[in-house]
Length: 88
Image (spheres, rainbow, N blue to C red):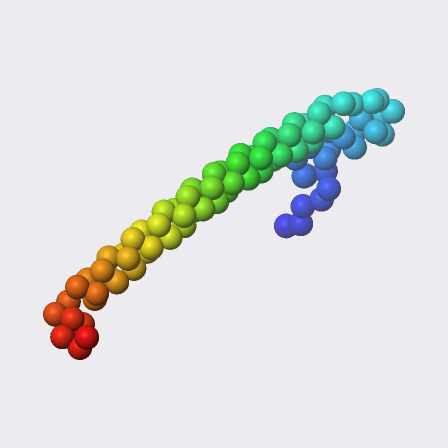
């Protein structure tokens, strides 16, 4: 069975109001409310993504420090190993 336009929720009320010459702000209000909710949802998602980016940047900085320390520790260990001192 095919649905006609009057079966679509919200559309029949708008069509009736337009046909009767009545102005109705309700569909416009619902639409703007829906858009406002979507925009807020997007803003929240964006804020979450920005927080995750900041956290990843901090982790990257920390990993660079750890790698630098490990490189220094390996260099010290190689420099003080018996193999390296006997070849001098």
